[in-house]
Length: 190
Image (cartoon, rainbow, N blue to C red; front, side):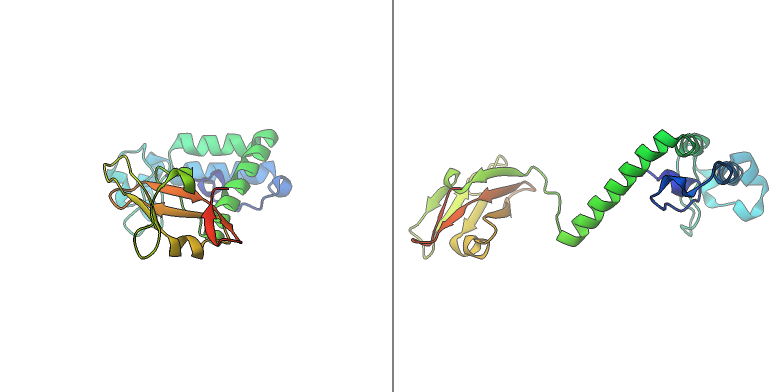
């Protein structure tokens, strides 16, 4: 797990570079060094946690989860990045981008799908003998009809022109692109 530099130095992230002075950064850096230094923390009973029995190089939450231990390297890297105006501006841009991506995924419900393959509807086999048409494609897991989509499912997603389905036999996913021919009401390749 990676921690952001502001979190390591216990500083608020405002998104605007000039909000923290060099003096504020230096004070936060020294406080973080004292707070997380293995020798200093072991002599201060208020900072002792169960995490001290674990390796010093790892970030370890204590039993109550309130105290996280950072290495000297993590603290120094955070300070060096935030005290250099160019590095800080670049870091802030990346942090804002990461946070906006997370917010967008939460808002839209976009989820990462393992092994997502994008195909056209015409690339799938079709079985029209059943009560309703069914399109299928074999999966590399060995299931000959691992990816299976019905006409009803396509009609529900007609407005979007795509549907994402999972394999019945494994964790792979497929995005199927299609278009609806308004005259015939049948799905066609885009």
